[in-house]
Length: 306
Ligand code: GLN
Image (cartoon, rainbow, N blue to C red; front, side, top):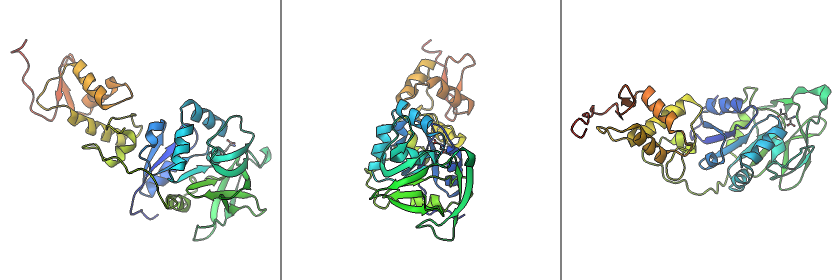
């Protein structure tokens, strides 16, 4: 697999379904991938994937987590958005048998579980418009069929019987199969090349000291908006927060919390404080009464003002 010259920040909606497999594929291609669980995390992404899973469950979680309008806005911003299987169902404007609205942005109609129970899954080699290098081995798992494609959407892949299984509409892509599990990364590469005229607002300047991979976790004021699940990003978050403490200064536990509260929004200063200590960024008195930067000079104890 070839590495990309310009890595993208790609979010994978991680409310339910097989988001990990998409992330592995993106990571292999050299992109940054993120599990998106809060609408704020969409802000600085270059692209978004809505994975396969159970479309009714994902639709419910999209609504209860306030994702519907933010994802619609994301689609309207021109950045690439790809729905695979359940994700394709959620992008369609018309869905047969979905009990609540999805994102409803693509001019396609889609039928859920269209191959019937007796054919839960099958595989087929597809010719996909725009994908070079031979047929694409596609895996269908309780897959939907795209029953109607209305301009400006267009079909880009069909089964031998003519059923549409992939469609594209500008920056939006829908596939009824699972391209993340076969080891063929061509569709992921194709997808990340679809954001032809990315009309997004210019990205706000990086907050001082923020590593680029942390951007989806920072708000406009540089505050951490979520605790990342990946170890590498947790490390980045903590080394971003640590310098907010002045070296040589002693902080009470409450002062540590107050300072952390200024730099994060998910209301868990206890977690951040503990990790800063566990990972050796902060030292503390045995009884936890005072904290200080572990990499700075050990501050004098305040016997003078005691
Ligand atoms: N059958 C599922 C649904 O309708 C989709 C299956 C999948 O994403 N693999 O939600």
